[in-house]
Amino acid sequence: MTKRLIGIDLGQKSLRLAILTREQGIISVVSVTESLHEESVDQMALLQDSLGVDFHLGDRLAACLPGGAAFIRRLTFPFSERKKITAALSFELASQLPVALDDYTTAMQPPVKIQEGAVVVAAAVKTTQLAETLAPFDELGIPLHVLDLAPHAYVAGLKDFLTDGLLVCAMEQGTSLALISSGEVVDYRQLPLGLETSVADQACAIHREATALGQAQSLDGMTLQLMGPLATVELVTGLSAMRDHVELLSIDINGQIIEAPLLPAVALALRAADTGKGQAFNLRQGSFALRGEWVGLRKTLVLAACLAGLTLVTVAASMGLNYYDKQQQADILQQQIVALYQETFPQATTIVDVPLQMKSAIRQLREDVGIIAPDQPSSLHLLRTLSDLPESLTVDIDEFTMERNEVRISGRTSTFEAVNRMAETFRKSPYFEKVEVAESKMDLAGKQVSYRMRMILSGKGASS
Image (tube, rainbow, N blue to C red):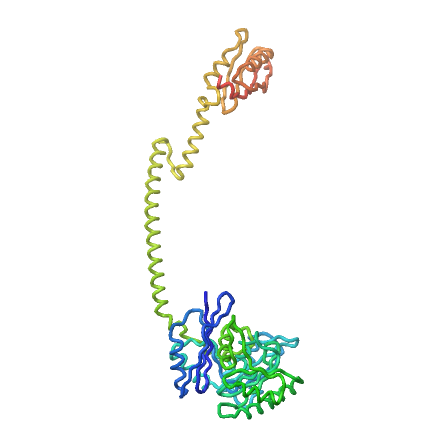
């Protein structure tokens, strides 16, 4: 999804607007424009005309206040937990400022952990000024996500393009010098230089403060990179006469070159891409947190919600009707199965799971009617085989038991030899696979022998 990054640079008599896009991590320039106006009250009208009301869900807008609008201090805490730092921030900041914080709103950059705890860069901005700055955006429904402070906002946006040294932001409302190391502001100066200041005076003031910053950090020969609407070739020439390594900053974004005068707006657009993890401020917090971001999208969202609701109702109704139809068919089939089961097994009194009960009943019937099972001899054949003994044998069969795979008989005869002969006769039958004499014993009178035999049925015999 393509997301727009919009930087808004409000000058004293101009409005610079940068619109970038970010898609799959690639940033491209859509437009960078500058509009002039005579009165500051025309700024918001120009901005509204430039942006319109067509804001998308992924849009991110950023602007900044001049550095002189805030007190900024670097604080050290003996702990690194963000909640603890937030709770103690106002007390620690108040002890280092020449004003009471009752009329100020505080903000801080993400804490940087050190061995003894954490270091935090904190700022205090007058609440009335903050409210006056944000009110026009909220009234016009322009979703300003980020309100940062110069020069921190510019450095956070351009950190991938800057070298260590000094970034000079020559703006209409003042000039700032930021000492940069590894893409972060180490120290900075704010100078009251504007449109009324001559180029020579600007150059002298910038050179003087740049020298002071270098001496404070024990740095010599730092490169000065200039940007902003007042960063002109004449200013570079004036500074080059007093020091080395002075250049106008320009950057290349996906093949498009952005020159120094329009860089602040582009830097703010790039700053808008930061979600709060970078070393920068965002005064859009607490009572000034962005509200009503969805106002411009309300009609679209309401319509989408109505369509989604209607779709859900339609799908739910269709599924309900389909389920009802399937349930009716299942009930009819169940009734037919129950009727068939009751007709087949009229003696059944309890009906729970008809298919399972029917399978069980059929299996029991097969066991009960094993006498006619297709893979075994019938009981009639077996009885005929048992009775078809030699006439010389006198044998009584008292008990006959037939199960699925075997036949058991018991009875009486006159001698042990008669039992053995009877067993040999059964072994010759094709119906028996195995014949065992389980028991044979003479009674106490010595006249009769009682016996028990076990015969394993042969499947082969059934086919004969």
